[in-house]
Length: 460
Image (cartoon, rainbow, N blue to C red; front, side, top):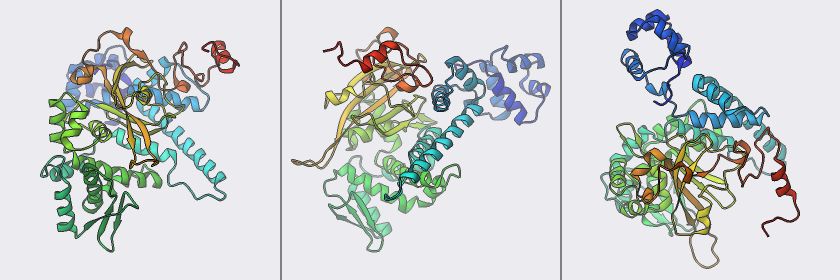
């Protein structure tokens, strides 16, 4: 708990329970005047008082945590900027700290407005083209669904671990094929025409022949998710807060989550990660999977009684398009305006096969350790199309000393950190040498404008 003045949250808690200040003060063993001062932000909410709240009401102490503050501030700034109403950081922090529910309501309203506008644009342009399977807002909604659960879904994690733990790490295919055949009467066939295709009538699961053993295990486990966890997935994906297209996307995301949890069982995976100081290549070799799959799984290790390092995971292409984004903590990805060119995720494209490291500091002063590497997807062969991405994994600097990638870095010298931001359109740094656009609601600096429109640059 790093934020101590949270009187509005305490007052809201009391009002929700229909209690007077005197009644709550008695329950906490403090004087009414002291409680009044806490509620008016004249006194801090101390840890002993917080523990008494927990003891008296079984309170989730996350209500008084600022873990989501950075993300909320960034999302709120973006929501207001979309409406041409930029706000100062001090104002945003005040609102988020004291009234996070109001902040989330503003963000949700802007998200619904943006989704409505996007649907209108799709409808206006869909004269001869079929409707898109899902809108960008649907992807954001699913990402938020996972984020709200710290990228950890116990309802799927537990049954997946029970299956995966009974199979040899990195050599699960034979056991999974036996499970498909014995429990479901399904056999495997190789088919170059699709990555995975299930023929329910013939009881055949078609898999692409180029898949590695680890990839085959993942695809079979995904099919098992639909077969054995269909009711759980349907219940979770039926969240009434999601639109139908977002529910359909969530169903796929949950099946993939189950597959990852099966191929990389939580307990064994976390023990291996801790044993090798989160060396991704060593972990990947132990479980027979790739660099990207390992990074993705590392971002899900948030079981309350056995937590790993809280990572954020991202995958981008050379143009800066973010195709995967998962977070177990509060790193503030931008929803508008792209990402920061000073971020080391882009440097990975110029250094293929190498893991690049970076200590980065966001405008709010929080610092992170990032690692990134380029990965390729494709079947290989001369002339065959290959997709390249940069995969990045990051964590708060407070956890960096648990990682092998922190060796040789001065983690305690803030002057060495690269100043990055969430994207030019929502970044407050006025003197950034890489600024491409002004912050929404602010004019473009003269020097930046000259650099953008001059016919010749001084750089040669």
